[in-house]
Length: 261
Image (cartoon, rainbow, N blue to C red; front, side, top):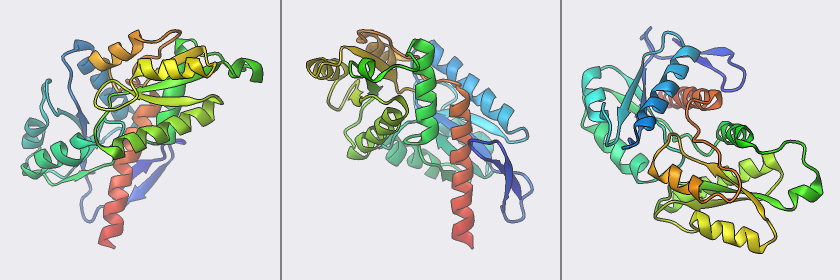
């Protein structure tokens, strides 16, 4: 048996894991970046996840660019069971191809959790980062008519990625009470500047850019630089992100238990 924690309340429940008394390892799968701040940010998120779930083995593996790379992390686990939680905010090539291929080549018995988005906890973290950057609270309806948000994401040619980002935008819009338009740094349209122009043409002149990136990097900086007003920081080690990681881990184990029943 192992214990799981509710993503909102922190209460613990017990999940059956056959005869094993040690829970499967949690492997955070980050993309990787040449920006040195990215590794620092991901390690901070890893530490927060560990603090929320003492006793859970938490490891890190990157798809590219940073050590440790995922194949090396999985090799070090040997045949230890593990749940891979992508630190990615939508479906796409990495989730559907890269990570499963790396996992399939390893001895470790692995299960792939869903990406972090869309989910209400992701919208909570996005809202919090916007507030930290200067997004006002308690605005009246007249002021809100001039406001909007561009949700800046990496982008992908996979239509499932756009669908996930669109759903995240709707969740954030419901929290803020203003339009939230998805836009992309690459591989998809609209770009952040194009989305800003469209909103300006609609009379939305007070527009923030919400950074839908886990960690700092080239795309996150590029999108923030386009902001005409405020731009939020990447999501990083926000508490809601750590709770979301654990929720995806528990969700994956719950699915396995249901399949075995």
